[in-house]
Amino acid sequence: MVFLKSGLGIKVALGVLGVLLGFGGVTAGANWHAAHTPNLAHRRLLVGHVVSFDGTTLVVQARNGRMVKLAIVAGHTTVRHRGKAAQLANVQPGELVLVHVTQRKGKLYVLFISILAPKQLPQGP
Amino acid sequence: MRPRDTSDERDDVDLLFARLHSVTPPADLTARILRSLPAELPVQAFAPPMRSARPANSGSNIPWRWIALGAGVVLAIMSLRLGGLLDDSGASSVFAQIFSDFGGFLASPSDYLSPLMGELPWFDIIISLTALVTFWVSSSASVDQARGNRPNGRF
Image (tube, rainbow over all chains, first blue to last red; front, top):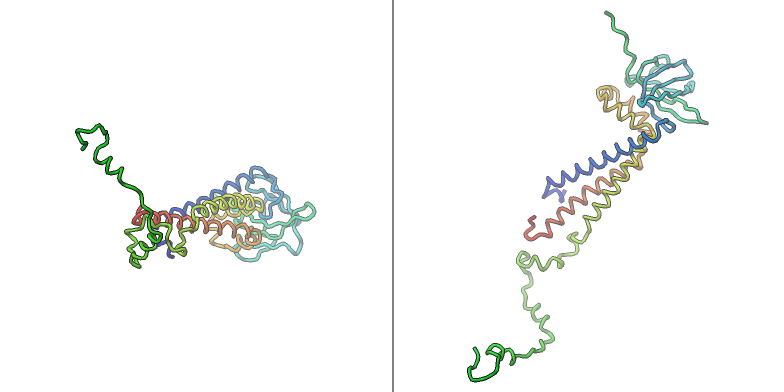
């Protein structure tokens, strides 16, 4: 690249400045949005711990502490764990999950559940 | 030097200047001077007064500084908007989880990426990346432009 022939140091510094400006803006925008819309109303991706699951309704506590009630769509909800398909029966309270949801008529339906960290079994003495 | 036996206050230089008068230059003086110059002049000797006579294709007339400023403003605005969109979709919480447990992400990236890809605001991401690249290229070109405008190419 012709424009890198001279003054390489200051040009690399300008590139780093641009990257920092971008990341700083993204972080500030996300923090501002999170502070002003804490109810998770438009979230389509949720990361949190499973509080309860009865086969049809999944309750997840999101990272910001809010409880979210989600409906399972029978036959359409995909469950994955460590890159492989899993069963709904594998979803247990206490597990860390990533949930992909869709909203219809004010109700949240689960499309995809990824079990990120299985529930830790209690260690014996 | 002033004559001693006269009351005239003017000296010889004043008298000399009094005898001078302006003449009208020949009409073709400028053309004759330009014709007498050699076809190729050494650029270094005439660099300061001939800045405006650079070839048009050198790019020196492009306002890189203003382009860089505009790209920086667009980058700042778009990154703020992008952050809001990422939080609105929940993608920011997925990124936070990836950064907090990078080993888990490397173990099975598809568990994170397959739901994430469909929810990312790609249009805003492309605009932000374009603004970032434009900012970098134009600010670098502005540095080159500033170097070129200085004598001998030095700061």
